[in-house]
Image (cartoon, rainbow, N blue to C red; front, side, top):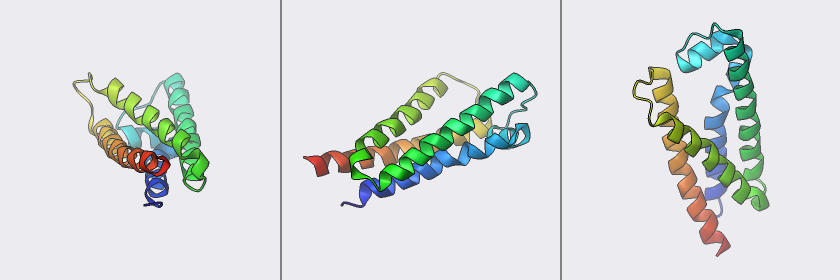
Length: 124
């Protein structure tokens, strides 16, 4: 039982680490999201997003080995995943790349629910 939260955090960290390759530029961003990134301003924003995903992934992975950080990391994971799913929900025509991101976030959300339940049960 004590390994559930760390395992969840490692798996969710891995999911959040996938977009980090977007740091490398427009070509990688196009591969990730299936969109042509021709505007340098949009490229900058998406590359910065990749950096932030790297930071979140690092926090989740680090917290997996620090029980005192489990709650904070689970909360950060929930905020990331739920915010994207809420923002993506009204979009009627997502491309294949973004549909993949939505599916990955649903998987991450399921993992986080399991992790949160284990965390709450362990602290009760």
